[in-house]
Length: 118
Image (cartoon, rainbow, N blue to C red; front, side, top):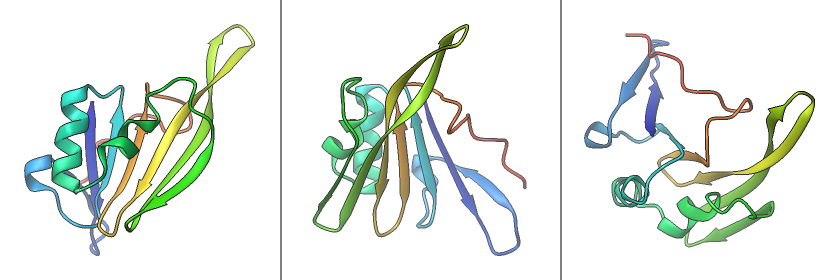
């Protein structure tokens, strides 16, 4: 699932799409398909391998940079039942125009985006 939000100087937050993407937007990918990864890679001009890094459940925390892009992979907690926890990777990609977050699933650290204010 792709969610895109952008805040504006008048304190409004608007939801955008890949077709209406503007610099300064936050792109969030939760359980993205290969097609969604490819579409965001093209629209945001971000390396597809950076976007896909957090989709490997065994990915370890790390920081990497390449050609002006920064990838930060962190492990975020996942509740699996009564007092049982695990960790899943979440990627944060910083480009000159966008911040992109990617995770295998929605999580408590970065819950689904709230509705935009018009």
